[in-house]
Image (tube, rainbow, N blue to C red; front, side, top):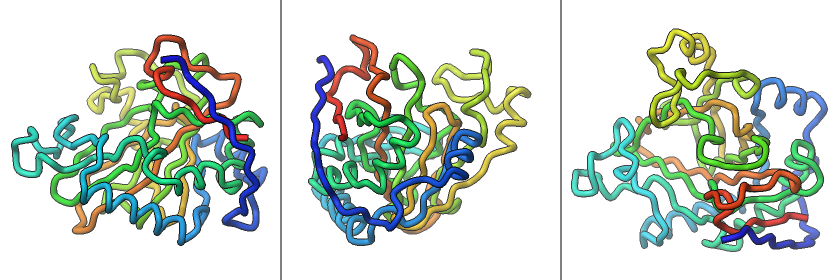
Length: 270
């Protein structure tokens, strides 16, 4: 299906006093491939998203992705195994509640994205657009990868916004990133068949050794480039972890016709 763009002209109050990155933060983003904005989403908005998340999990509102579907390390072997019904993500977050439209059109988020991607900001609904859930006991490890491996656009110029709905730290499987990895070139042989970095490849070991864990508090947002390598361990705590993830691109960077990236509508945020 060809991508369709929906446009809103909204005047919304910001959740913070300053809507933009500082020049130093923009420099850090392009140098490292990521930046964190603390307390970007209000406690009230975070609480509403958590309630939508808990309701979606309790009622198992489709579409869902299960840990067993991907079979990453630590996940249940099948849907019939112990923990086989554990949800990995609630898909199509934008359609689940109006609070996600409020988040996408919040100047605290949008103004920062426009600094990185230009004035015509687009949110594709074919990718991310989800609530990531990481449950104790049956969550999994995600290997080192770039999100662009899933996507097909004219240029690899997209930025993700990862919003923490609760504390995220190494014990419960927060994201890890490799600073500067978005600016490097790689050989196909550095990846395995699923496009994860091969940890046994000597060329990759200095990269992986440079990793940084990104700890977040509720309302914090991690912005990271689609070429930035990132990974996460399973949840070793006794509490679930929830995060909301959307991706964005500039209006001149279009999905390739016939690809999965062009299979769903896009939101033109103006």
